[in-house]
Length: 455
Image (tube, rainbow, N blue to C red):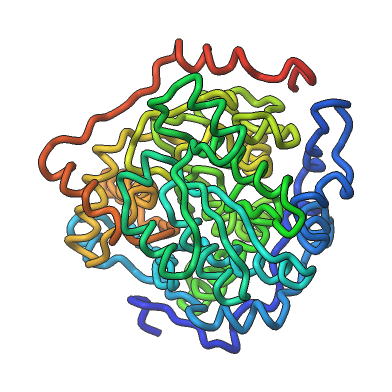
């Protein structure tokens, strides 16, 4: 079989999501109620999530069946292709074989609808009329707007202000699918107003936007909250990516030596990597797993592994994760989807246990890699995706030095068609590299919850 573009048929679309929870070396740490310090109970989440998703969040079943209604929508763009980056390999002069899973072929242009469609379905099934959410670069907001339109739900999106201003066409896309979009922090919520009182010039953060969306959902009976990353059920839905990749690699008799994904909250990375990590944990695969983040928001590489709020206002349960502190407000880099103070607890646990290796890059080297990819493979990557490409190129260049013929596979999480202003800035030499100051990180960490004290 030609390995330039490896396709699956609709009949080969996975029938169930892969749950890594029961396969972990140690049980995942539970979210905690910040008032009591005790594990959160399912009924405590019912104010903002439907029962179907709550059950998935806490499930220890190894496989969770994909509902037929969700499966039917997935067929609009899934299975997605796995491609061999032959022109990139040639440009690098590497003996490595580089593959990428192209999630940019979805209607919103990223991996995000894999969970947006599932979340919209389970909310619709339980009678919810509207979903409120946050979005960083706009990929998640676009995906949820798309999914809500398909299931006849209203959608309210709080978009991080810097991305709201940098990426107007993501906002346009959300409006086309019928969503209402507000720059965050906004004056629509108590959380947003408090932030603006302290800093009227705030450019926002995912933590702030989450606070606004959670508050909106909690104060309206017909509204639930939808999260685009971090939580277990979100990562679960994304595992359809890795399951497809496993089938596709098997078709060309390849086994990965290196698996790479960019990380903001962790959903595209986990969805791509978790099925393989399960094989690693169970001794069926030997591979290096690399999670790539920006140096301006170095959660996995410089954050503390401690319980913290998932949002800025402290409205969420406490999650055990690598965190820069929920008060952290990162610089206005163009990879808006990677500007989050924490990461998915399941990803963080595997980093803590040494299964996943984190790495951080400044934005200029990432854009350099993205331009090379676009000039060789023809697709313009999202700024977030460029981080994974940078790592893949660096690993391929190591193979050039050593002569090793490694198989490198990365997740191409989204295209950059709405990010061309950032490419203009890069090509004009106007992009600034941010290395977030250690003193600013220490200052943000001072605001961590005092109980529990961490592990």
